[in-house]
Image (cartoon, rainbow, N blue to C red; front, side):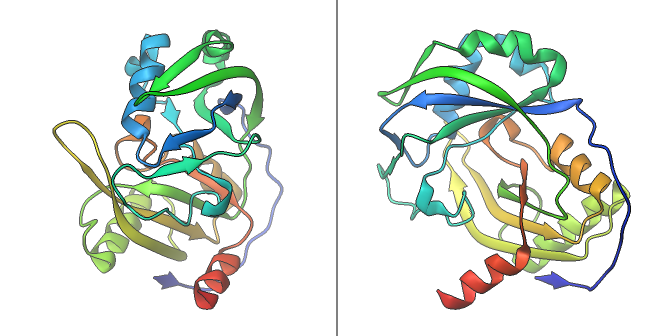
Length: 230
């Protein structure tokens, strides 16, 4: 954990270069570890995503997961029970939206589980001062202290000073031939431009597998309180 008090102000207009597309889905349940099969299913329908490093695929999380911060136990074959309001999100360049609309009405098979994609709408990135990534992979992921230093160094190279950070537990994303170790990460006290830059480009690798994608969050304090009550 890293914690340093700061202050800042100013108005900010959010650029619309990168957006989230939010798709309605019909899917009752899905393997907890579905990142690889989701990626494979989407790339078959949208082959251009492999050639665009700006495209990121959000993993799907149930309502009881704290929007992905609280990860279900890693039990082989465990399933997510998905409420009807569950959505699939793709983070893409705005100019790719017409191409991505080809997903509407299509069907995916994810490890034998059916997912029907319905209509979608666009969501603009939100410049909250707190953001989190459900899965972040990078150097020293097995050591929280070293991993925190790596994140701070990576941000510093982009001109972003890290003030507050919480790390979640290490978890594994299973892929054929090469599993990926990752941690959930929350960053706070960001300037609006810093927040948007992180959401636009992420950190680390594996963004087609749900890694390194930052999402807006209301407050780091709420997570700290929830952890203290657990």
